[in-house]
Length: 339
Image (cartoon, rainbow, N blue to C red; front, side):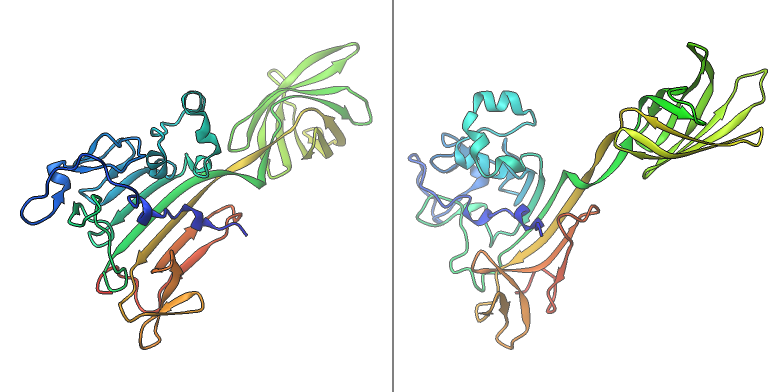
């Protein structure tokens, strides 16, 4: 089964690289602050010649506010030396052809929001490495992170039929003697069009068609124009380029059979998936048993992630059911504080 957890960003590693060469001397408290604009982006980053400032950068990070709003790919592209992806593949790949081979490229249209506290990634640098501070050690630090990712995919199983166009009918024992012309179907399955009948060697207009296509069942109501008072109802089963098991009942009391050939299209559903996860640093005395963190009193904290962290809540939804559903909450508690 596919798993939505691929949405979770390994945010802890964002600044675990070398120091910018031009770092100003630290003030008396031995710290640099984002608000002062003197903490550099790491070497190798697209913004390596710049300093982190307040507000959002071009990728979606707001380090002062402890927030990221952007796409999954943009959470990584900068530190891989690429500019931010802005939504248009052709021009981006023309300028950055190797981006297509990166692991994050398939997730360029996945929206991601991250929030974290100062213990997870600080908005200051008080250490010797010239980067934003991270917890050391992790356990007992009180660090936490939330990720909320949403995206879409095309279902491989769920689809609707589209029968827009013209269909040729074998009607009431005849061959190629009726037509559904100019059928137009909307996304809700409503169908309109015209009915034509063969009069000698030529087709003539018969009237209007209006109905619905639900799953594979087509229902069309046929009405002759004034001064006629004739009407009827077509029902059939749509398949690949055919409509079978057709029946027609009219206002004269006739019950007739028909089939049709034409062009049907399987339009696969666009599915929206969502994943929300809370991640915390376990208490200093917590232990791992199997794949989960536990307190010193053997109370379950949550699944292990990234070695030193624990998931305390994850909710993943997928109406199409192809990625599966996750609904986990730590039996201990789901709150981010006081760990």
